Length: 87
Image (cartoon, rainbow, N blue to C red; front, side):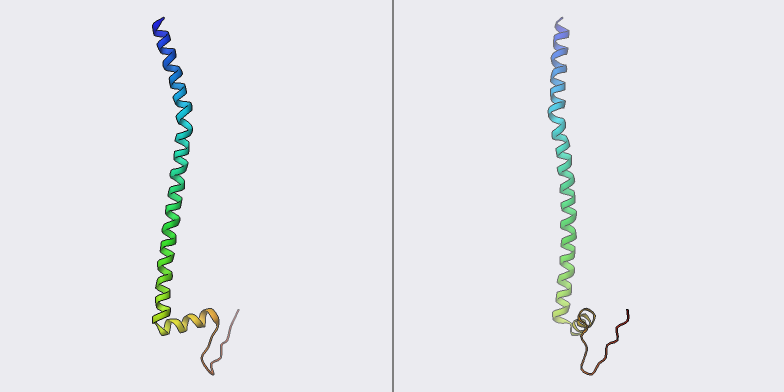
């Protein structure tokens, strides 16, 4: 009889532990996934930021790059220069 009572108490504690900790475990996995996604997003933004810094440096310090950038992005030209655009 004593064995059955101990077994019943352990079973009840086991079920209680499963019901209590399973949602926490699922939430932890979700948070770890979100953390991984945010880390990847932050790394992508850091990379983009570095590329923009390099481009800004070129625009400030490289006359030929600035000229190329102005031509390609704004359609600017030198004096007496014709630009032909083809679609």
